[in-house]
Length: 473
Image 1 (cartoon, helix red, strand yellow):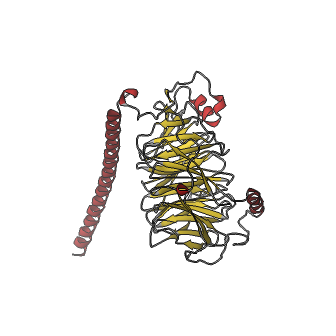
Image 2 (cartoon, helix red, strand yellow):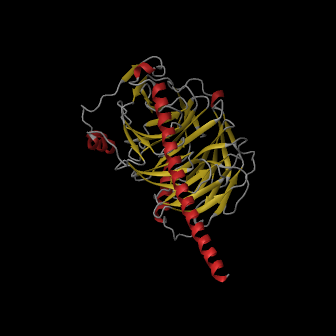
Image 3 (cartoon, one colour):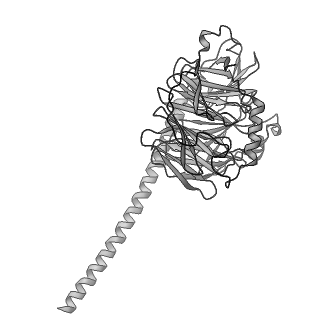
């Protein structure tokens, strides 16, 4: 059987930027240009939750490995942690000075890595909810950063046309992959951590073996830039999302394109496999979230994962039972690929417009790079709640929840906020400008001090030369 479109979700009012399955595969979270997150229950007729808190486009969202947290990044320069329930308590992280492009949890859930247009990558401790360190080597916007499966490495891609691999132990860049044609929009490790795949703005998909720093495969299957990729849990398949409006599934063992999926009516920005590999979901400019079912053998995937775990160490020989073919190649279009257009076949899908509950989150803790941890009076309770939602007491801070059963609610009006949005934005802008002025004055003071020191040295040297000349004369 071929992959089939099972269901579609409508609720966002602008393009979908990111999708992610919960670890148990029962929920789906999406992020959008409409500044909202939406949490969908995959059961038919179940309520959906819309989380309101970001003030600009939400660029990335991800479930924690335990499923008790959501992390989101936004163009409002913040990162938020959410409790994925009907209260939607959130905590705000501020350290980046430009829009944040991606978030990613480590496999143990203890750390979070964020990438930003301020050219930096930042790592956060989730247990203590505090900033740890920054990685600076990129010379342009950083579009994506991901942890390796074992958490020892971070891979990042930037508009400076490089892909960098970082060691989380010594916080150094240990490998640098460059591409002179275009830059990578998205990058990720394969499930066993030996290879990385990049989605290129030059319409290409590349797969590298990081142990020998070698390009393994090079696919040219899209007619526009590739925006997102996702590995099947077995590591044998890769799905890609492109601005040409299609999804494509690549068979990495045979090195060929096997499926082209047409369901979106515009650019596709994001795609993600579920943890089991039985489903995948996609979202794009048409504001729709499509849920697909794969035809891959689940038992076969489990066997492969066990085999990968047995040989998961750095001394294992390269390319052993890994991705084939071993040599780089440019993929050619083949006639045996299957094209699937569900719009031509599917007439009635499951309900796509479930009742939506708005969850407003304006009262939250804020963690910045300098403060480390800044919590209110019940800070320890909130910290415990973020690690284990069952610890939260019923009398904790109430959050306004608004129910809608038939139609979606409009954007929250300024009257719903304690402070008007325009005033808040103006104050934040003033604070940013003051910070810039403070930093500028500090730099000028340092330069003035250096200039004075150099002038003193010059005067002393001049006096010495004059005295030497007078003695000789």
